[in-house]
Amino acid sequence: MHIGQKRVHKTKINIIDYNAETFDEKPVDKVEQCFPFKDRPMVTWINVEGVGDTGIIEKLGQCFGIHPLILEDIVNTNQRPKLEDSGSYLYIVLKMINYKKGENLTVEQVSLILGENFVISFQEGLEGDVFDTIRDYLRQHKGRIREMGADYLIYSMLDAIVDNYFAVIENFENRMELIEEALVADPRPHTLRAIHILKRESIVLRKSVWPLREVINSLERRESPLIKEPTQIYLRDVYDHAIQIIDNIETTRDILSGMTDIYLSSINMRLNEVMKFLTIFMAVFIPITFIASVYGMNFKFMPELYWPWGYYTVLGVMATIAASLMAYFKSKKWW
Image 1 (cartoon, rainbow, N blue to C red):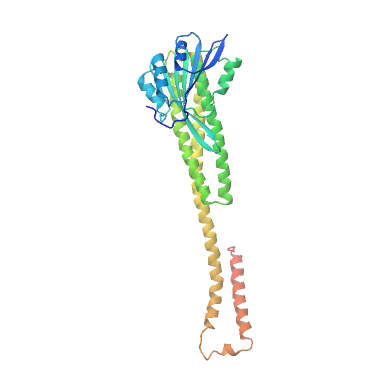
Image 2 (cartoon, rainbow, N blue to C red; image 1 turned 180 degrees about the horizontal axis):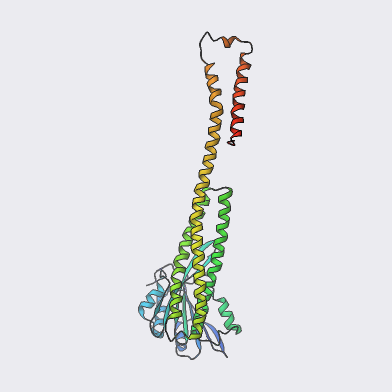
C-alpha cells in the first residue's frame, strides 16, 4: 500500500544500460520490459518515477528478488534515511531536497537498490532531480563512471544528492541574511513568521541529513562484496561532505535561535523607547499641569487673578520649567 502524497498519476520507467564500449538509454512503457536486464553483464540503471502504482513496484521486486518488506518501505515515503543489507543487494533510502516554486522546500524520498550489475532507483516523481549530471557523464563518456561497476554508480548518485544539499543550505543562508537585516532595521510580526518557517525547514534538513552520515559510513566500512575497494575511497569523500553539511545545519540552527532572541530584544527596545518618550513627555507636563490646575480653582480671593501681567507671567513660568526639564534630560542624554 502506498503511503504518502501521490506525486504523479502515471509511473515512468527509464533504463540506461552501459559499459566502457556501449551505451543504451530508452524509456519503457511496461515493467516487463525491464526483466531481461536482470542478468546482463553490463551495468543497468532502472529509474522509476512515481511509486503510487504498487503493482509496478511489486512486479519489479518479484523479478529482481526484492523482499516484500523492502517493497513496503519503497512505497512508504515517510522513511528515515537508512541502509539495509540483504546479501544479494543493498537497499538505501535518501531524501532529495530542493527549492521549488519560489522558496518552498520540497523533500522527495529516493530509494536505491544496488545489485551485482544493476541499480534500481525509485523516486516520488517530483519535477526534475539531481541526477542529470550523471546521465550526461554516461551519455558523453566523461569521467570513469562507464569503466566502473554498479557500486560506482551508487556512489555517483549519493554524491549528487549530498552536493545538492550545499546548494540548498546556501539558499537557506541567503534567506537568513535577509531576515537578519530586517531584524536590525525594522522587525515586524511577519519577520517572526519567516523565522518560524526557517526553523521548521532546518528541522527537515536535519532529519534528512543527520542519518545520512550513518548510511555512508556503513557503506564505506561494510564488508559487502557489492562495494568494491576502489569505490570505498570515493565514499569516504562523500562522508566528509555529509559531516560538513551537518556542521553547517547545526550552525544555522544556533543562528536561528539567536534570531528569535534578537527579535524579542528589538521589540522590547522599541517598547522601551516609546515608554521613555512618554515618560519624558509626562515629566515635562506634570508641573505645568499642576500650575494650570491651581489657577483653575474657583476661589474668590486669589490676588494673582487680578494682576495685569499675571497671565503672561504664568505662561513664562510654565515655559521656563519646561525648558529647564528639557535641558536637564538632554544633559543626561535621555532625549
